[in-house]
Length: 103
Image (cartoon, rainbow, N blue to C red):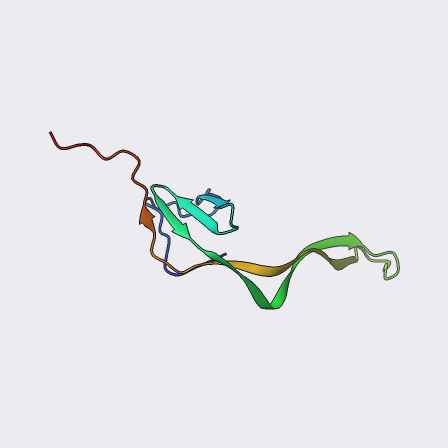
């Protein structure tokens, strides 16, 4: 996901581990990102070079075992291949559900 601009937390805790918003798609396949009371419309684009998501794991190595101690072997497994990204270039629009009538 690519956003043009910044998202800032209201408090000093930051955004790590927090839910940022909801991602939905229209019937036509247009991505919508809802953050609080704002909505962003995006588009799906193909990445020029795909990204691989790797998971690192350490396991004891039996081939290289030494008399003195623990020898571990680091392995990487590919869990996903990312070929597309969602781009949100436009400014967020406020979601207005109920406009009060003038009295």
